[in-house]
Length: 161
Ligand SMILES: [Zn+2]
View 1 (cartoon, rainbow, N blue to C red):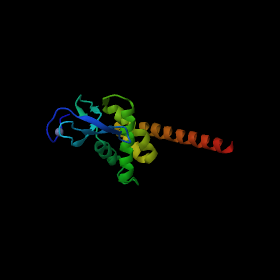
View 2 (view 1 turned 30 degrees about the vertical axis):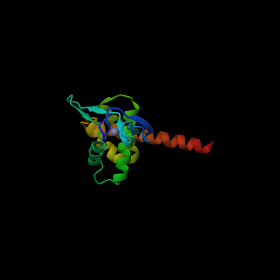
View 3 (view 1 turned 135 degrees about the vertical axis):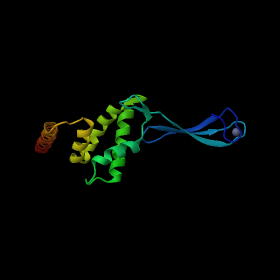
View 4 (view 1 turned 90 degrees about the vertical axis):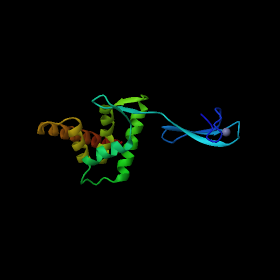
């Protein structure tokens, strides 16, 4: 890392701090030649491999715009979408891979979207999982109902203990 002031090729790290979400490290550096201090930010690169094989950098904005279509007319705020995109990024980064398939990004979107809004979830799943027929919707809705019933049962049994 060259000093931005005198172009000296050496610098000393005086402080390191990891961002809250663990996606970047901020380092305070000091140049031994001119004594000036500067900050560098290191971000672990995360790429998404699309179905056509093209690789592009992971972007929370892309997650938001992708999910936003499914949320049209639904009571979902921009803040909630931003939080969803953050959760998706944390999930895919937790896999520890530098490259992730677009398919897996879609999978990471489904659980938090379902918590947010079940209609938006069904719309997104129908596109992403390629629902062809009403049967596909019926099956997905039946799964949602079963899981809702299961979680209601476990809450009820938890309350009676
Ligand atoms: Zn310098």
